[in-house]
Length: 265
Image (cartoon, rainbow, N blue to C red; front, side, top):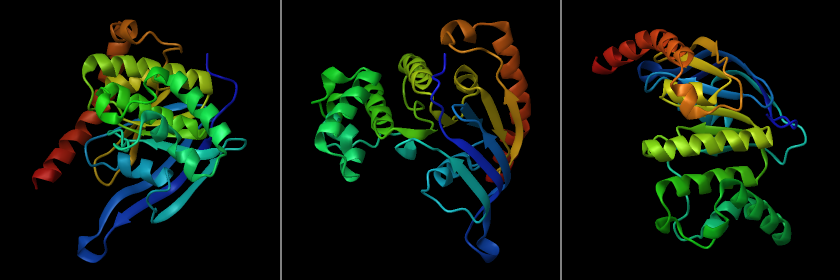
């Protein structure tokens, strides 16, 4: 059951993102209207290059939008958002403990409080025994768990995740998907999760947003009816899951083909 403490509420209105100018101008996002409820797990799928990651970077404050508006309501949380990328981005010269606590250090959090919060984050992702290890001593899955702990330790109202498990093998990906859902249910944070995998979107999300080929627009928003907590392995074998996966693919297929034709010129 999802925690009572709810994450950020997000409202995106008429969002547009352009790169360059004149004949070199590229419209990456156009007419994006989206509302995300507090504590929701929202997944975004779309063809390669459709602006999914750009939208996430804008929400994280790492990129500016050209026009439109974004409103985030995140009262009573330490920070508004934190982002997890496909690669863990851990500093190789720092231990797991130092990497996880880096954001607290840069914010000037007192050492005793920071230590307590790092302890809690490491316990949350099951890495307490590896706190003194360095990234090169960890498996790919453990590095991503460290990155998730680093994001959670700052107590963000919203977690932005850009294909965080794409580089992992199938077994580790399944395990981390289950762990992520467990952590989300325990903390009640809002999660916006970009993925190329329809299956992953259905296994994790409350809703799935399907985006068009460039310029990225929202083509359809599909409710995922399966209740939480989900047994990821059992659910993926159900007829209802297969039918919904096919429905989303039919919505997405035209955009994937259009993106391919545009890339081929």
